[in-house]
Figure (cartoon, rainbow, N blue to C red):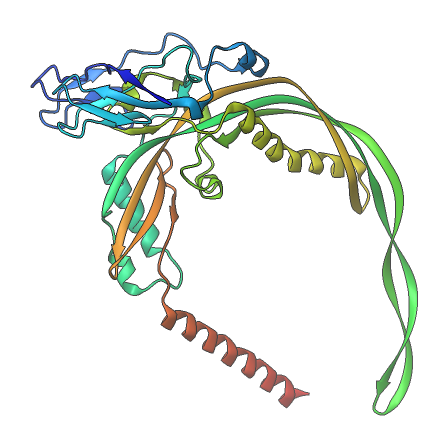
Length: 363
């Protein structure tokens, strides 16, 4: 892999000459020193979806073959090597944002800009710590992150029209009368009860569905299940990609190819299609034995989503959390109080013992 030289745009403050950064929840670049603001140009187009079939014709390289970017800082001239789309200069902290280069990678189509700022992270983290069940009392005092990094994470979105042919069975309930024997006061008594049974009938059919913006992480830097817990995202609020929204933040480039992303999207579509099949089968129960799905009008785009990656310190240990930088949703690691868990178990056992004792007394 060869490194790619990048000369990022200059994000220089028009007031004091320092640097400007994107201000969360706005459409401006703001200087952290003098407060001067510079408006980000409005979008000249809408966010677009791209036909997946056209990917094969793009002059792109496999992401694994694209080397690190070598950013040349427009402020101090230092060189910073990184495989990220956006970084900070390691010497003067100036924003470094790579411009899309034709013939290399799929360019971001859209970005969901940061809306939660650092103060918002403190508020969300404090509320999250205070609401954890079985957490040590001292955790409620945590409100500051030990480390905090605003990062845009790449995701693929996919649209598709699906037509699915299925085979299965429809189960219909019916009831039979069953006779059984019980012993009452030393004597046997015969009683009857209604027992539910299921009669199965073959079923087949066809269902169709239009999927819109099926979201699949395009990075393996963080576990997919962890990123899924940050949903839902207000995807309708995404704007056409502009490098200015990345100024002052870290932004990962994708390491999952769109073809692999589509496989992941189909895996996410499958449970929805199966539910459609079960609904179409009807009856009281359903069995789906096979589903054959045809996909058409498949569209895709590369989208950057904002996340605060934070770590907080508690009892000498560091815990990582992620914060959805649009909604303030917090997910991550937390400590547990063994004393609180033990007390809860003891209380539950005592309650069970009391109920049993009451039953025996009144029997």
